[in-house]
Length: 261
Image 1 (cartoon, rainbow, N blue to C red):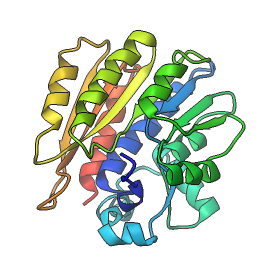
Image 2 (cartoon, one colour):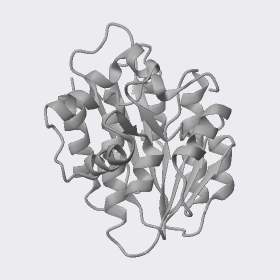
Image 3 (tube, one colour):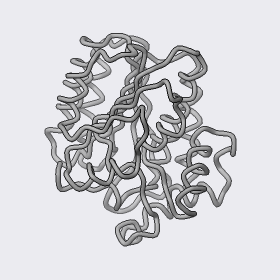
Image 4 (spheres, rainbow, N blue to C red):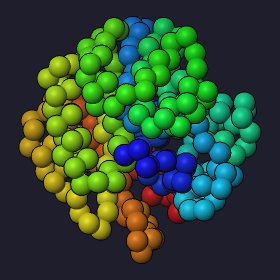
């Protein structure tokens, strides 16, 4: 959705959940010397200021990453923490790395990064925030763009899917995209995030993906402690082609997100 801007939600508990998992998966994939490709369908602006008016308006980072850091819930050596530290060393103590910045800080120069962002302002901000010789920023629909580039070179890689889910159709679109992507690029590690809301629209997405018989498939869903009366009550992750040991990474991400409150 072109109306959605993640600046209002940066650093929330869902971000802790998905970004901790993503950083750990990327670090795990770099343990092998072969280069890889990383792609995102909905990249956002790449980096956020938690003291910006948008973030302060919702206060979601206070219950999310700020609470996790205050409680020292995440080990300093975790790839997610290393990305946060690297981002703040360069951009100040209120900076928060979105998934593109986490990828840039975690991956190697020989790895290729393809970021899709359709929103014009977010796309311009993304180009300014995350630039390197191995980073390719695309102003196009994320599902269309990733499918068009798949399978990429290098063929080994990971795709992160993080739509806004502001309209009901995005749930079915995400399911269809995962199926199409797996058919076109069977080796890809696929990480899909979805919100758990009172409306329950995530249940259909979960049921359809559970029934899709995807290889090395994991789905995890957590409920946030003390959720708001209205809004996101939890967070879900789907992983396809689970790398060896990745289940432990998801366990850890769940613990970090539920301890952030």
